[in-house]
Length: 112
Image (tube, one colour):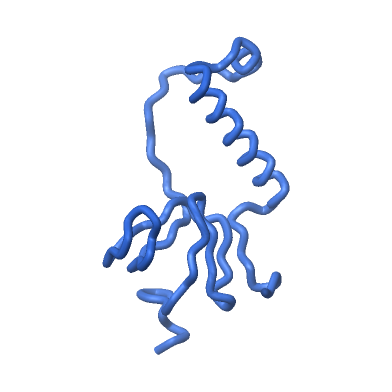
């Protein structure tokens, strides 16, 4: 596998990995306990006048085959994209690894 053509969508992969581990641990505790601890909230910033908002993050869209939850579908959008090596034929999203087939749309240029 080539490391040189891999694109990570976060500049510091060690920071990303640590933050993801912390998030996973926090979610597990929230699931088990139902709420954060006083220590969790002691130094948390205050967010005032807040609303739930959507933001755009890199993802992949395409036809999927053999997805463990969705099966085969003509069109999906993956969860957030974290790593991509198109030359080696793989991607890693927040949810799982994907093997990459033919590129489509704007990515198709090299195959036309």
